[in-house]
Image 1 (cartoon, rainbow, N blue to C red):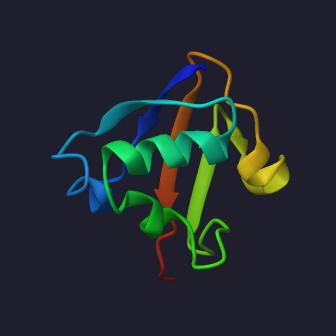
Image 2 (tube, rainbow, N blue to C red):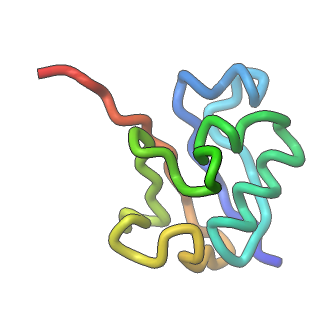
Length: 92
């Protein structure tokens, strides 16, 4: 199991007690989100939709790579990787 750091956007920090970065474990993004939800109950529902896919208005990066253009939830998360959860900002 690899440990990664996850950057938490302001809007989701109510789940992490205000922490802007937390540790999570998992070999893939899916496992990391499952671990995050085990430690911060309810956070996965803000990242994933009802069908278990990443929400349309949430961007997730593993390192510098947008997972939508990688393997999505199956994107590998090697130990020490930084994962960023970035809610899309609407506006013009």
